[in-house]
Image (cartoon, rainbow, N blue to C red; front, side):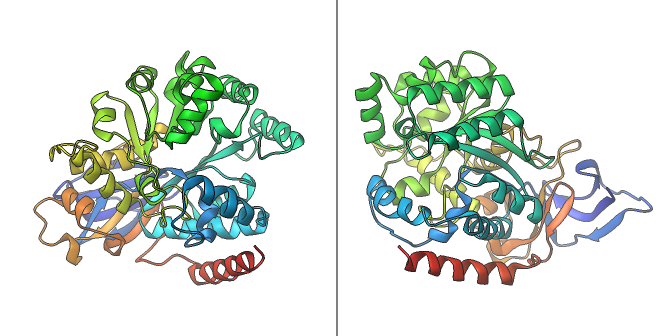
Length: 424
């Protein structure tokens, strides 16, 4: 891979030259002179780590604005699942491509995806130049026995993994799987070295039903199944976590697991608000995700990161807030390095030796002026209009706001979504 030299870019308030050699940041210095490198004048631009979306359902962009303002299980069972039943591989590819376009435009280079027809999403990720953790989604109540066996075989064979795409074991939830299937998911994740990712304690109904059916909370059920017995606990990532007991939080902290806050979706579906201050005080590793565009309704990590930071300061339910909770720098870490580390990616930081993923942002964007503190402006004020270019794995995947083929992606998605909706 060629060398890329970013000249006169602002990093941590100082003008620097940044050399990318292959897919890593090779050198950061006041001045770098190197013949043969492709040089880019970055005057007036700052370099920031990009977002890592730690929980998503990419193809659900096709359901954006469809069946809004409904409770979670009504929304799922009566609207979302019937719509999704009409989606084949072509539709999932079109929806995933729209998702990739939106994410890149808003500064995201990685997403963790829990969906069906994973090979079609992988194709899109490879084409668009992003990174992804692609789930082999396990839900035995929604999958025929042959399909379930194929999922486990697919995981054993490690099909379609690459430099930028890795598979994960992703049981959908405790309410869509039998105890036997969940135990198999734990076993395969441990034996094959996979990251394990699932929805956890998203609603009060989920927790209460788990107590009724299994005699314990969802976290306690996973503990009973051996998920936290060894290093697999450190490779375990849990989305939502709205209703965690004190014991649940201690279990996750001791296991070294990661919680992914998905607060816009939780608010929109009326599911509740996670106890962010308590989770942070327990020292649990954290990241941020958007969930799918059908329940957010965007994949904009910038918007999500600000929301998580603000909710942490309110400290619901007693409303005795703490404005020092989750400051901008910590929120940025959570949305960048935190998400990367959760999935075993050595990125999310502009530093020598790290993977070369980055955003170049306009310092003269109205939302970044005046610039008393760039990180505070970035988290609390800015939006995607400030992003000039996006780099993933040492290559530009968006340049000066443009992505190749974006007009066709939008047309295909609009046409596909209308066709699906008309058939429901």
